Image 1 (cartoon, rainbow, N blue to C red):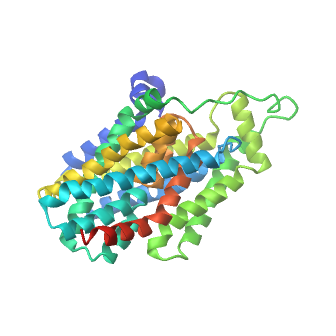
Image 2: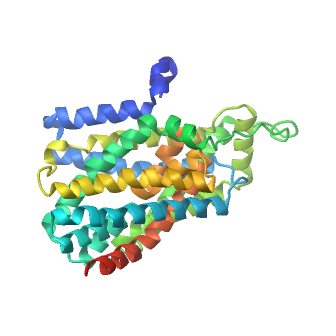
Image 3: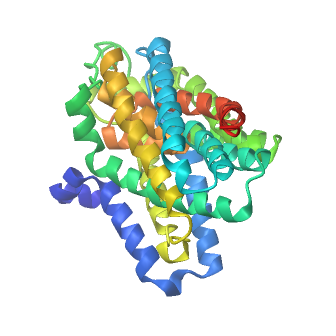
Length: 369
């Protein structure tokens, strides 16, 4: 982050793109670092970053422009795009393998790309997918979603805003921010929001442990989001945010959240060791997943044009469904649009809730075909 301020090319390319490349190089060119303890530490860092980033970034948000109608349109357009492409791909690629196995793959794909990893495991068990096929799907999913993430980081912001317009319009500073009230102290500006976000993360994690493994991740995101949104309405938090807006700077909590997003991005890339993946199995599954991810993206852009959705909304919706809600703060940081976080997480949570129903329903619809 400091180098991005010093060297403009890093800021222009995006610190996330630089971190992703460095993480991939570390993962694939340094085999001596792939000790089990180091890998466990890397996973731990990745798992901690997002529960810290979400409340820190959401606390810095203003929800006055929140639109339920836009969120619903974005979710439905993304959902329909994934379903249409997934089902179409089933009929295109099933001839290259066992149709029954492909119905299982299709069901699991619907679960992943409308929900996330928790849906994937549940649906795979529900349709009786064998371990070998499951390994192919997870390996290819890591490869293609990694490529998709590189595409988003490197080209997403200019491409989507050029195609669909820029939905991010910074608000002008309001006269009520500092004219009649004293500026917050350094402790209030820097420490209070960070401590509040840390408290929210700890409480959310403890509450999420009360649920089963398949529900713990969705519930963690839901509780984090709810508590952070509630905290953003606290007088001290609103005072700090208004003061930052008046000075045309980002609140400290948002900058800290951004740091954790960057760390998460590095840990994700650092965990992608291509040598450990099964790349020569059932290649028709690889082409199928590639078709789903990028085909649904194209279809979603078409729907966004018809529904008059802006580029930021469309991009965060796609990432929330394809990569799951923990990646939403990464997109918000990429777009420099913190107001988009609530919409993206809402879309992702709706996908979590519907993923199992849709995946199993699609399986029973297609398996006789």
